[in-house]
Length: 456
Image (cartoon, rainbow, N blue to C red; front, side):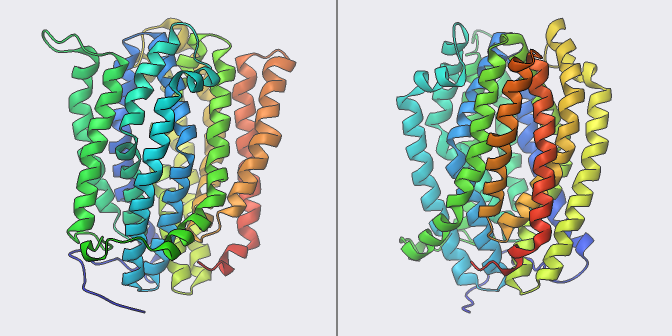
């Protein structure tokens, strides 16, 4: 192994010491970071909610389209984090740095290409996602700006994933703090206006997100270039390393399907919901924002699984990696039960912050009580997913996610909503049942232990 000059911040070793303490050290910056990342999303829903149900529905469709198209970027992010964690755990600084450089270049090229495709086919893609009538031009004005700024929008979470994998989630926290500040300061002005400026509506919301993430991307790159992170970009070695790129892509390929299938299923789900009008779609948009915010402590804790599993496998300690994963599952699931319960009990008050539409609020309270149940199981499956990905096993989660979504969730959604005539109610229950199946299969796969033998 090659060791080179230390950075201004040493990589943290999570291959020894108290596991609970390790989980806490990795989790709390991620929780705060994700909160900062999500607070603008919550405020975004509040500002857009003032523009009406059509605006909320348009943004819901636009974001579903974006999430579907960035599936390769999610896969590259997970693969890069797995490789960085493995080399940091093995104390191989040079290869960890090399992986970061290749990941950043690969990520920029891929995000740029996806953004160009999105810009070229905006309206056909939105129609496929379910945008029609008055919603179509609104959604187009939103996603056009998102696609223009896609590199910045997606580089921030990717860099954060590598910071966490290297054992420094606090750097991701600092980046997201900047993103949140810029976005929150600019969005109400850009959406609603100030003084003589009348505001740009949902296009202003998209521009605020791009501005905030552009600042975050520049700061993340600054940390990597000035060696203020435990892994860094060496400006004297700015060249392609095809072997490392191939290694990242090889791990990412199964994850493209793993990430892509739920994202595509989400777009199909949005299209099915849109068939019942703007109100259910707007309601679903608001409810999911609230639920995702409530689950931040669970998701932040779950995120630590990849780093702990990856580093401990790199240090040849598979049993410790397994104990870490199971501990995180228990913590994340317990938090989810408590926080979803609180969100459901206070649902009417919370939803009123987004809209005064009585129909949206009434539907939202009901939907939250159903979907919230499924999210508890989702947190367990997400933690096992992160653990397997951190071990470099992206194939198993891909197969499981694909099976559940295409063999269970989508057929069940159609059967309950249209076949049995439950309409949108059938969609909500199909989501819950599929999350229970996903958690069950992911648990069984992790307990088989094949991930312990995975080589990167």
